[in-house]
Image (cartoon, rainbow, N blue to C red; front, side):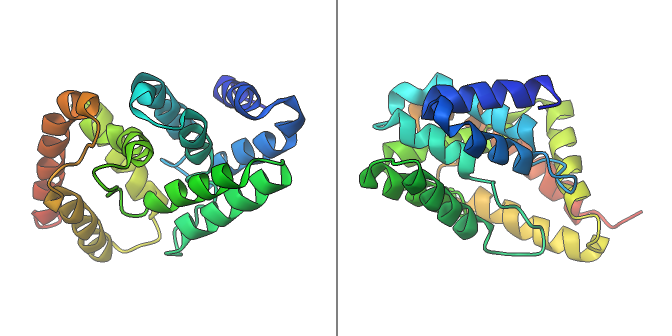
Length: 211
């Protein structure tokens, strides 16, 4: 573990899964440290876990939500559309090997798959907490949001600008069409208005003709 964030994540993993699960945690942290990542990094995972800590009373299964956070971007290839599915399969295989109860394995897999749409059912308390934590970055202050948008663009540096603008616009418009970006009452109060303002600002920027 080279960085303080990586060490913090490994400690959090072992608190959750036990010391015997350290090799699985080390592999997960290594995955979030892959060189092609610019946003989906150890910093994103650490930030997401901090938001989960603040929202965890809203979840029905705190362990499942935290496990899902660790696995949700474990597989991240910018040229594939099945990252969530592959991450979920990795989670299910790893947790099964660690001897986790079947119900937990299934719930973690379900939650990881949910991060493809970020659209949990109204009664899905675990899904609401996980998705709210994953999207909390949308409510960052202006410099923080600009850094997030730039990091996402850097992950797709191989994509020509015109195609990136079209793809990114489609993603943001899909989010903006959702009746609620955030699903827990706490997150809605904290994040909803700022996130919608940031989405509209980035969409306006993407619609401008390139310089």
